[in-house]
Amino acid sequence: YTLPTFGYKRQVIFGWAARGIFLLIPLWLAHIAPETPAPWMVYALIASSFFFSFFRAIGGCAVMPMIYATLPESVRGRYFATDQALAGASGILTLLLCAALFRLLPNYDAFFWQYAYAIVGTFFTIYYLSRVKDPPRPTAALLGGIATETPRICLQKSAFRQYLVVMGFNALTYTAFVPLQAYYLKTEAHLSMDRILIYTALQYAGVILGTLIMRNHIDRIGTKPVFRISLVSAAIISVFWIFLIRGQGQLLPFLPLSYFAFGFSSSLWITANLKYLPRVCDEEKQALHVSVHSAVVGIVGGLAPIIWGYLVKIPGSQPGVQADAFSLFFGALLLSQIGLFFYIPRLTSEHRERPSILTSAGVLR
Image 1 (tube, rainbow, N blue to C red):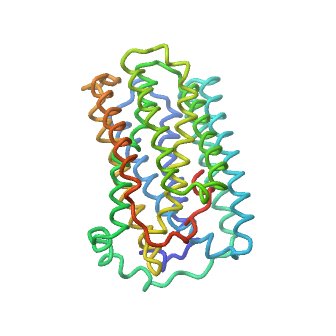
Image 2: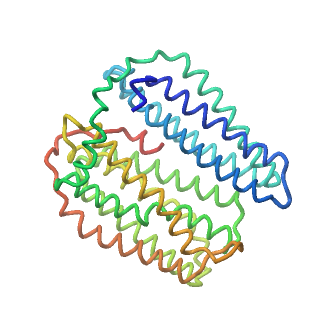
């Protein structure tokens, strides 16, 4: 609703500047380094995280439309190829930098310099973005029917609704995996923060490799086989974690491989999704269909880690997880992956000729 009022560039600048302001709260908390944080400090950190995410979403939703409205079609390929390379390299370097900070500095100092780095990055992003020419604003008429069209799109029987249910069902457990595994490794396996960040860099490397491989082969293999390959590899990872949390500590040396494989599997799933989603969208209202899909799956995927986190965490203030509840989570994750593996071939679509809605740079982001 705000794009016709603000325009693309102003909305991105406003959203990203506002999110940068909320980084000042954790920066200050890391600077004072309280030995025993007061309750209000915890609430302030939670509030800053919420508003950071809120304003990041406001700015982020205008980025891709602004890029497509700015770049001529003839140069988009070269732009996204460059963007993909820079995003991949900077992502891994940032994770390694964060790991080095936690290895070399006390935790509060490491957090301080990370937040300072993010704030400096926000400043330069806004500075260079302000020098980019703002493309014409979208008209209000394009967005006026969202309130009335959204319920119909979600409830009317169609290939889009079928696909939306599948993606929402997957998000019920899939999106909780990354934060829960990091929490388990920190509290139960007692791994250091820098090691977990290095594992995350390996996961990101898996995403990059999967993206580079699949972008040139998905048209030949087909989206449904790619979905199923992703589910098989993710199911193997789920089985690995079930054995790990049931006391098989000798599996810990295989965690780097697990992280890398999960990144590879995730890239296959996202690449197939970006390829398949346009096939179930109304061509004249593709932007609205994609927005509804992103919103619904995003809400489900955002709530899932919160709900599962409360279920698997040890009651009270003591950090840790309940082994039985955590096993139940991975059992539910495994069952959903098996169910989706057999259901994916039943997906229907009408527009198989349509191209992917985003390039592989979007997968990396």
